[in-house]
Length: 183
Image 1 (spheres, helix red, strand yellow):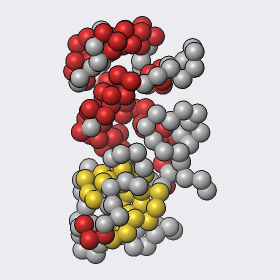
Image 2 (cartoon, one colour; image 1 turned 135 degrees about the horizontal axis):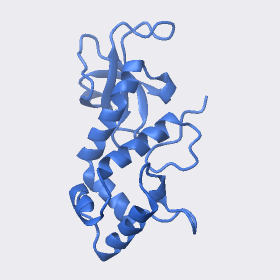
Image 3 (cartoon, one colour; image 1 turned 45 degrees about the vertical axis):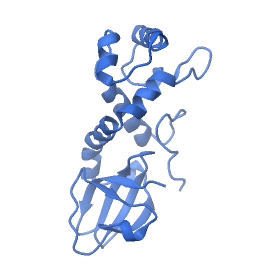
């Protein structure tokens, strides 16, 4: 269960043929769970806004009810457009968590490493990354870029992988997200 979500879209008129009341879409900051949300009457929600949706209903200032999990295809077009930016914000706001991933992620098989799942990370960069993390664990994205040549914007590599996992329900390996909703 996610305690905090980032708002992707707020549809005040509802979604034609699906939902007539105001509805919002959000993404959880811990497991990147996509959620449908019912806002409290009269509240205003902004894309990218971080809000509490946890179990303690008295702490919820803007959300009346969590409708449930959503799949990528359930999101509005505006939510699709906002998703890459919000994911990148979440990654940057939780840098230590993702630095730990770079420092500790294992090989998946004898010939395939979890880091190879990051889009745009080549074999040479992968090998250098593994060597460098053995010498000294990384402490920041900036330090990673300094120590590993040809590694640019590791935060964006993570964000792109998260978006891929959310878009494709048939991903064989999930590094950061929950399995999609079974329909």
